[in-house]
Length: 68
Image (tube, rainbow, N blue to C red; front, side, top):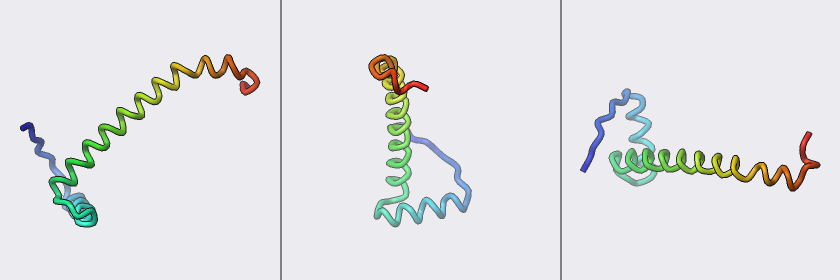
């Protein structure tokens, strides 16, 4: 399985360990989940922006009084 070796400062590691402890997960599981969630969040936002750009012209055409 692919793996990634990431370097953190001591302060960053401390914060990551604290957050993992708060969630009751291992540091490895926490970092994995947060990384994947962020990638998914970015993909969602990019898709939402594309969809908004696609439908916006129709919305503006249907509700022209909203333009200023």
